[in-house]
Amino acid sequence: MPFAIHDRTRIYWRMQGEDEKPVMVLLNSIATDQTLYDRVILLLVADFRLLRIDTRGHGASDAPSGDYDLDMLAGDVLAVMDAAGVAVATICGLSLGGMMAMALALKAPERVDRLILACTSAQMGAEFWGPRIAAVREKGTASIADAAIGRLYSDAFARANKPLMDTARREIATMSDDGYAGCGAAILAMDFIPRLDEIAVPTLVIGGTLDMATPFEGHGDRIAAGIPGAKIAMVAAGHLACAENPQAFAQSIHDFVAPLRIDAH
Image (cartoon, rainbow, N blue to C red; front, top):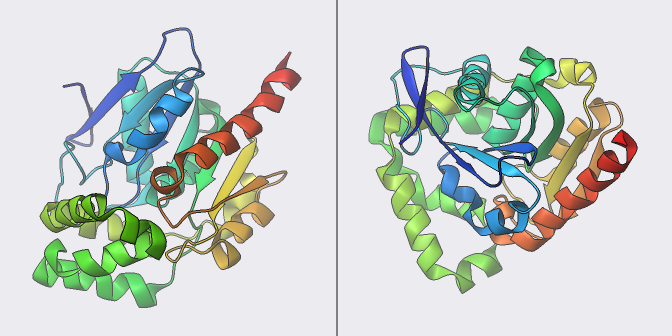
């Protein structure tokens, strides 16, 4: 298994696709791992080398105790890119992954050629994340698993996909308490609103029409308004749009990237 080391922490990564293709880095949400993108991989791999990462505290990556921050998590991504021999990439992140993508674009803009920010936010309220972090630190992730699932998928999708819901609930309930709380602290401390106009790379903001965790109105729309020239695509899905509607998610990426390739030539 390939690991990169950053800040004495091992970060697991995996590369898929043909060597000559451009690289797209895929960053997962809180309470998932790189398998979040399983349903969309085959729809993207013909055009990209796909570099997937288990965010610190998730999956096979280490889960050190204490608060994390987005600069730290962006540093993890840079360490993985270095380990994989990737100088520049498209960075696609969903939810926490989108926050990491924005942090990376601000920290090391020379490593990013375009951004895809899905079902994410540039600023989250303490009224949700403060109590959620406290609950996980006191009672563990099992105590919030049911509530978390209710925010990740639309009701109709959840009813039609009980095996997937049971699997996702089990994965949340058994993930590292330190990993969840550490990443929750990074979300709690985030405020990119004043700096969005510093992001200069082509950017696509994807919203989920049924997203209850980061509704486009109040979250995605603020990102699109703040990043110069940002494009918008809406996908009929809940918060984890790449898993719930992979065809529309992949199509929105292809529609965004294709004109940029034409312009480059």
